[in-house]
Every structure is written in structure tokens, then in C-alpha cells.
Image (cartoon, rainbow, N blue to C red; front, side):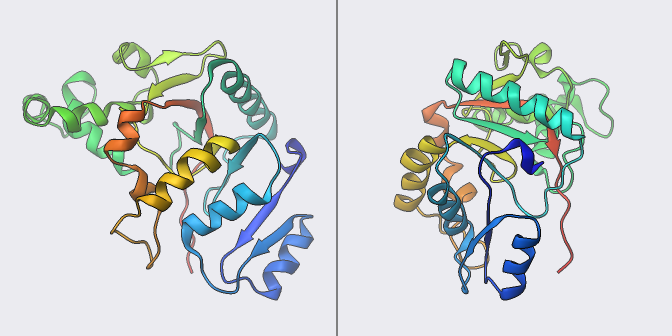
Length: 242
């Protein structure tokens, strides 16, 4: 996949000589620190260490599940839409094979079982009651329908629309930020997202460090109404044994 990109940078937390050797084996430029800097530190190093307009940010437990030509096709379509439709970020996690840990889909089912009648194990009346009692929460769950139904724009036409390349677009009012497998506008990441995370660190830490997801996924993110793009996706999530 490296042939599709102009620049490559791999960031190692607690970098070792073995890490550097591994990067050189694949012709990648290595960066990193001997101490752990957390997710925010790692992402900042990638954003600041590359000089390009768009970055595909990947973690080491997000393998590709599609062939190279399909990856190329989806990248080309997303880039076209980002430039022509002013979309700052595209999700590249596979909607068909999202992999482990996608909790938002389970939450979506709890609120919208009656809108997807083929679901089993959910009570439609209870879903409607949850939406009535927790309207804000229900609105925030709508974006997750992209991972629960192959045509979310048909089920929720007021929430999703299609781009000229037939990708989905949804407002950040309805879908959260994710660190996993995202194509981002580098300037937007550098000038908007990271400064906000720095100024509003979350009290909920990950391994003792601040995390972009927990810092972003609140009222400010929803109020910005950023346009979030979704391709069919080419990466899954498969946790690695350590």
C-alpha cells in the first residue's frame, strides 16, 4: 500500500533499535521517543512530521481487509470529495467488517431496533421509549447506523447524504471522532483539532495519557457540525496480543 502515498512516517512509542530496524526493512522513515507520549503525542508527531495536504492515520492493530485496487479506488474517491465538498475527515474503517470494539453499533441498536426490523434480540417498544426519554443521546447514535445498515441514507435520509463519488456524509452532531483509520486534512488537524484537545484535556486517561477521542467527543464536537465522510472502508480492528 505504500506505493499509493508520497510520504510515509511510522511513530514508535518507547522506540527501540529493533523498531528502527523494522522501519528500515520496509523503507519507512521512523520517529518516536524512548518514553511513551500517549496517543496525542504520537498523532502530533505524525501531523507535524509530514509535509502534505492529507494524512491517512493508522494504528498497528488495524489491518487492511481489501485488495490494493479497492484501497486505491476508495482513497481517490475520498480525496475528490474532501477537495470538492470541503470535508475535513473521512473514516476508512470497514463498514462491512469493522472488527472488534465498535461499541457505538450496540448502542445504536438499543435506540433504533424498530427502524431496522430484521434485528433480533431487541424490543422495538423499548427503543422508542429510550428515544423519547433521551433525545440527545438518540440523535448522537444516528451516525452509527452506517455500520449497522448498508443503506443508512435510505433509513435516515435527513441525516446522511451521498457525495458525487457516492460516499456518505454525516454531521459530527450524529457521529463521534475516532482515532482509527481516518484520512484527515492535515491543516485542519493541526490548527483545529489538536489545539482544542490540548486546551480541553479529558480527565479520563488512557494508560495515564490524554486521548483525542475522550477529549473531543463532547458538546464542542457536536456543535461544530463538521462534515464527516464515510467510504465503504478498507481497514478492520484486530487487537494484538502483547
